[in-house]
Length: 176
Image (cartoon, rainbow, N blue to C red; front, side, top):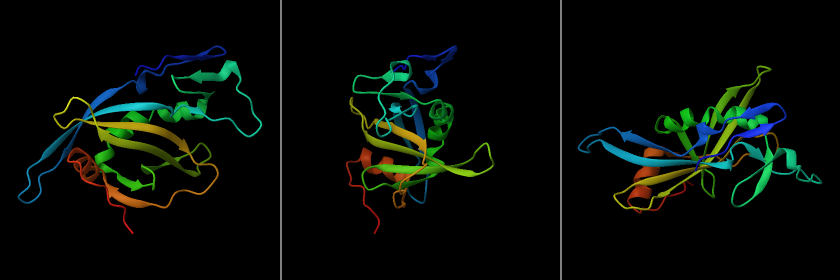
């Protein structure tokens, strides 16, 4: 996927940082187990830089951004935070991930402009990629600072465990 730039007023927002990319994650050797390298194709979704409509709001064509499935409002704040996504995703194997009950998510603490700590939630799925040879696909579905609603209960899972289980067709167990 190659996202097209978005122009709002006099400003053009380049989205090339969210184009598809290929990453390799290394799980270090441990005991008798050798190092494992996971090849992962990374894709970023529309929800990383757009938002849904508020209750009673209609879609304004001036701020509308569409993909093949839906149209949403371009969100400058989400866009600005999306600049962090490629670096965060490249560092996933060093971060703690959490089960969401429907997929997986993890949190990154950011200091906002007022000095308040904000929770930047990044939701993603991992699946086997087509083409065989154990390749994997990571799809970043959405990324935003939660401003309302309840945060899903955190149930941790190691990212390399997630990659290993998906690659080997093993179930992902939800901790109790």
